[in-house]
Length: 306
Image (spheres, rainbow, N blue to C red):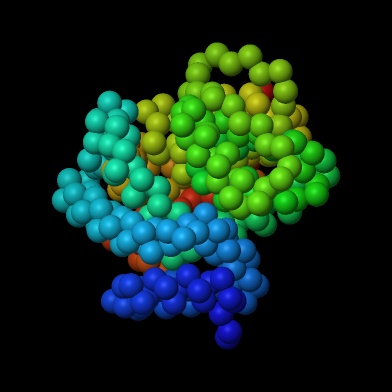
């Protein structure tokens, strides 16, 4: 099967710099069919555009990130918990270290293609967006590099797109990323703490997405309650929560897809679909046995009691 051009360019450059990673890359990308690879080619084109002339530096950051995550995995296996358990610890170790954060964000961007759980989460997101009602209003929490936002901005069925982040600097980076990806339509970016216990929401959204954010929070249920209140009556939410996922800034540990579903249901939401995407090319059974990272994607709607 021929590999699409942007995927090929990214793979070739990565393996030129890190040939020992070839087996991992072959296993990861080998799990995707042609239709999925075509979609991942769009993802790869965005990664290449964001990295620009600094692609080699981004790949170096990715290699560094793999080492950092391996260290966190060893700590997790030995201790049965994440290294940090509250925001203060994470802020001291990660968020207040500008150089660490630069490499961390760059490495994570490249991982969106090469880590199979990240790639399958992107595919799932795009499938989910296709089911949205015409003229849908979209809200995303923690937009990061804007990879998901860019997909929505390109969708003619989207009437409005908005994103929240607690950090003004993160939103500035999102805005710059959308510009580099050629997004021309207006996207509303709001500095907003999704964990706020009281939030006066004037508008409701047909689609809400929170991907790889809840594991960074001390009180993820508070965030889900806020987002449930932000849903339109017929709206739907996509929650992506990685389990058994040690990382320098992860503090809230869940250990099964069932626990993620239960957390979503505690916010008064009714789960319509729940999928698990293991990392490393593992089967779900094997990933659970060795406590490898699994990305859990849950689609839910409002319950009648809300």
